[in-house]
Length: 190
Image 1 (spheres, rainbow, N blue to C red):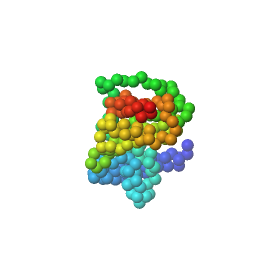
Image 2 (image 1 turned 90 degrees about the vertical axis):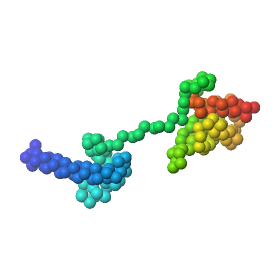
Image 3 (image 1 turned 120 degrees about the vertical axis):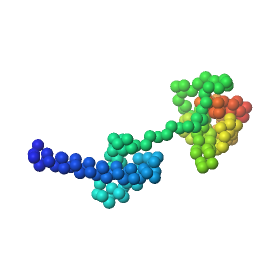
Image 4 (image 1 turned 180 degrees about the horizontal axis):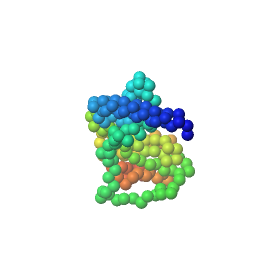
């Protein structure tokens, strides 16, 4: 190693340390008003600052810097649970274990998700064809009641253009998913 490269290494380390210190001060300044701001948004806010100070730092390097200084915000855990598997209703056997559908309308899978809005939450019940991965029925409601999932299944049945013979309708074992809707599905197909 030459004497020049030896000293250049230390000068570069010193320059990088100075740049990182500037970025950290700016991050702390931003965090005074935005305590829960994530790394990606923080990076977008820091880009003009870094351009102004001729600092070359990518998003991953910023993340590494935030982690090293305990400034990366941890994600909050999800508080809403749409599945409650410990209920008194009959738990049906899993008919689709190791099953691979070979055609549409052979296996429908149902689930519920939610969307946070200013006045609370909206719950979206949907039915997906496992073969085509197409959503064949959905319903948006402001409650997690079983009747809402039945409406999603009813939409799927009404919109179906092909026969629904030997259709398996699968949901997780949650109380509010479509256990009651399975009976409704069979009644509608008869």
